[in-house]
Amino acid sequence: MKIVVLNHKMNLNYEEIKKYIKALENYKDKVVIMPSSIYAGKFIDNNYKTGLQNIYCEDKGMFTGEISPMQAKSLGIKYVLIGHSERRNIFKEDDELINKKVKSALKNNLKVILCIGDNLNENINEALLKQITNDLKYINEDVIIAYEPVYAIGTGQVPSVQDIEKRITYIKSLVNTKVLYGGSINSNNIKELNKISNLDGYLIGSSSLDIEEVIKILEVVV
Ligand code: PGA
Image (cartoon, rainbow, N blue to C red; front, side, top):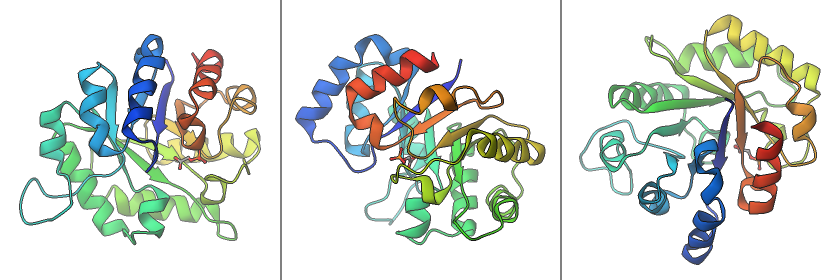
């Protein structure tokens, strides 16, 4: 079964979250929800597979505003997204911090989804190799990878199916693991994307906020 991750980013208010939880009741086994962390407990109480969009690299201490992997685990969180391009670009997270976060999350038995991706005008394979090498330094455990070309996030600009397939093959030649694709996935392009044979799932941002869209996508994927 393909992994479908719904990344809400910093969206939806509490009333909308309550509606969302009801509306996806019949689909909860088919998705991993990554809501704003303040709503994570609500999804867990309703038996959704729930993840966090970010996590810190220490278990406890004086780190105002952060959430630790130990706390996440104790709440029932299953997955964590690490290294999303918005964390790298807006919050200036570097590969060294990302590597620490991955280690710490794994130590707490969380499933890690590591996001990597190329910018326009850079050598794609070199960019992917650098991120994988640095982010997964001294790590032998299984880590899921989400391939998200930075220019495809929230833009509607999706690479061709052939290009995505090539990148997935390349990533799998470096790390023997599951690889997801993310970037402007919607109910119109999912049929085409779903033809990519070596893909293990999807990381969905904007379209995850629209319940009808989510259901249409799931009907193609699952
Ligand atoms: P998008 O975001 O689907 O809105 O492009 C994907 C992501 O950032 O994970």
